[in-house]
Length: 583
Image (cartoon, rainbow, N blue to C red; front, side, top):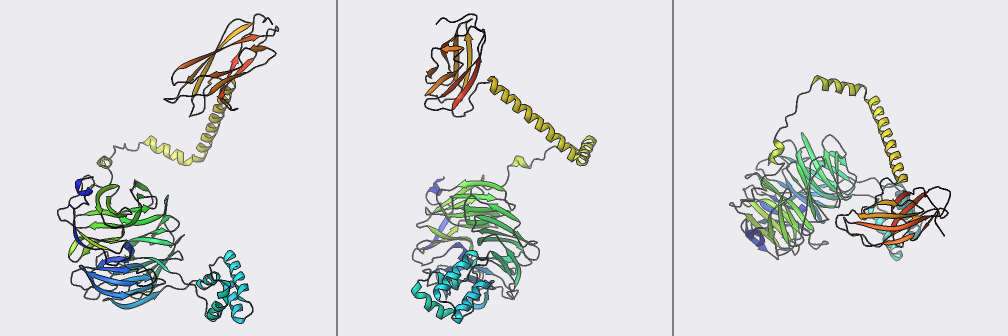
């Protein structure tokens, strides 16, 4: 890391503003930059979460001053600025997703409210509440019936029923009297929001709203009439999204879902086209060019293609708190800003670390873009509610090695592929016409080869032609030498440890033989520590006790002391004795 990076990368960024008590509690999805007055100066629009239960507000900053503040009825799930018409002057509207509604502000005043369509209500649940309304069942019976429906029904219960099941027995009667006359509704909520250009890719082109819901659905809304233009479904509830393209031409919607997968939706299908399975749940999603960069809970940053092919992976020093894209069209520079829990913001281009920005507190949201009249502005909010503004220096230069993304230059060299010959074409036609017969012949030959290999392996085991250990942790090799004419024979076992550098210890050797034919002085012996590469001779004597002139096999087992399963087995064919041992 350079000296600039170790000191907070002051060589590339200017500290324009820092207010540790700004009182901004938000996330990257609730922060945007837009020219809300048409004067060429971009404002900072923030959906402030407040305390989580109160104090939710829509705040607008110009420079370092708070210029506008509007109260929100519920916690904001996302915020976007978009152009909803072609009227002059070209001033964008602000859409705030909160609960089941989208609140549209134009000229910083409430303009329109869109509510998600209601979901299907369980018919059994309706019947149970109807009985409670007529007084046929008491609250305890109502609770038992609702619990039974929740376990078996395919359609989830409404919020009213779920809230009723969580009450104590003393509060159930009052709850039923208060709500039994009201109709049952099942309403979903918005989890994420984005924008999609409608017909042109211009910066001030009209955009559609794209919203993801808790009911695993994605809606695309018309920017003027606020009707649903398209509806798509997902296997799980979405949490983050990235949108590219135009609705009337072609578009891709990349969705990160709660099941830990990323799904890619396209224009011609109402279901995901591709799926990216992640090793852990995603916490950040950014599109850079044609690639998708994902931050995961296992402290890793990964890059994928649009079709889900993994390109690279880098391990980070701390958990990821937030992510955002850094796009400088004037320089043709694109990178990813990653906020970490160790009070640092890392700038990555592919898997290369370009810059490290140290912050006084943990960063909760990041937004890079045009603020005021400065194009390269970095907006940060911290966990303690602070607001930081940094400006990229015009003289800032990143490492040239990291500024060249993509494959290595050697990959662009075209291979000298020979032209197709007549023989190749004839062979291709033959394979197409006789593909099934050729596959059957191949499978037959493959089965015969496997059978021959299995027979050879069994024969080698029975005759101990290759007495070598099959254990990778303790590889051993052994051969046996029999000396003598009889009736006494000298049996020598040469044991070798074939490991690279690991010694083997606590081994023993034992023999299995016919006691009517042979007698051994030491049928069980301990083996000393085996140093790798050295051959250890182990000697014993065998006496033949039979006068019938026959021989037999002596089996040798090498095993750990105290264990019954052998590491190595060998068979020794004893020669015919020319005499009889004396007792």
